[in-house]
Length: 279
Image (cartoon, rainbow, N blue to C red):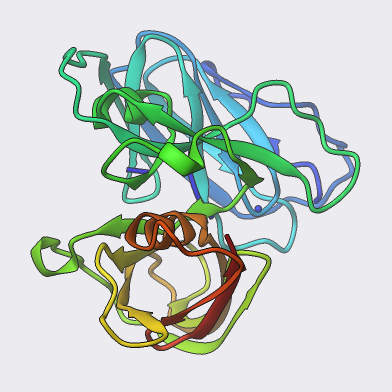
């Protein structure tokens, strides 16, 4: 799975099969990332989320992306591919295969980008929640799965471009996390902002938040969470990373568990504190 957690133009070494926008020849050289691509049948579009610069990979091969001067860490994400399903492995290995989704109906609720949205003010809602017939259908559009069901009250709800919390049965979910520590957490406008301290400084770090699919019987209700952390970073300095998570799936989960609830509500999120919202 994927769609999470992004000012200087990012330059790309002029190698066959890899395109990006032209850059100023006088711009100092930055760190380079080697990208290995295999199995491509058509173009794949990536975004480096820290610099917000897009790239197009058009063929198999090894390509070098040059980061903006002074930037050492990176976060590459696939935004679109033509007629194929692609994944980024270890942060730098792009692999693709033909799409082969089944027609079975096992619905999931996922967050996808809104087509044609151009933001002129911030914050700007660029995504929406949508029901997909199964997880494969969501994956091939690079929508981020949040609920293992139809969206119901979340259907077509527009939201910010942040990864959604993943609601699941924690007891039966295997979650692997590389070492990290949390230095601060806060909730505002349905968004959890968490500051992490990790060892690294020259690679990528992928954080995802998982929430249990059942609330406690206490008042106010409490909800268990856990973080996953995949580190693709060989450096050994201490760095700080901020991650924002969309909490709207928790609000929808609460609405389903309390169908008669209206007005101001509070959920205690384990290790974070109060999440206040209105139904």
